[in-house]
Image (tube, rainbow over all chains, first blue to last red; front, side, top):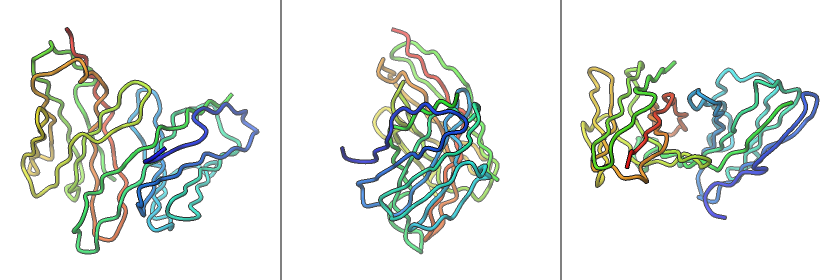
Length: 119
Length: 115
């Protein structure tokens, strides 16, 4: 599959479980993002990685732990989640604009998401 | 931080008519405004975007307008078709050189095209 892929597509876990979500981008981008999409709420930015370095943590609880080993892969490690964490977790990637702001727009390409249910 | 408001939450129009979705943003430093379309069970996909140095942009039946002074931007879809039915999200970000910028999204508009 091309573009941005995510695994698993569906995940059911208990509150005491530890699981990980995986995202891979095949677009040669150098920035990756995690977003959370809950019912009747806007997409919420969780984390931003720029050249493998975390540049933004949008006040996300520590039970969510991101990892970006290289510019093509992004993980979200989950532990001791709550039922209210049930949501669609979307990964996205983009190409960082040049230092002078030139180049491509910050178009973000999304993966298909992981539908997470916490029991 | 940035706050994006989007209206209406649901919009029903007759096939062939036009649809307009409006968004406002709070941070005057925001300079990039994309619109995403999300069909049921699918990922959000970019349909059009605009930078702050442009007032209007068109792509076939889709257009976006931006009023920086009033801090609002709108999506216009003309000659609507059944395949336009989806949830549309506006977003805003501060695009800075050399850095990755997360997007702040509106709550979405469910567009329904009536046959």
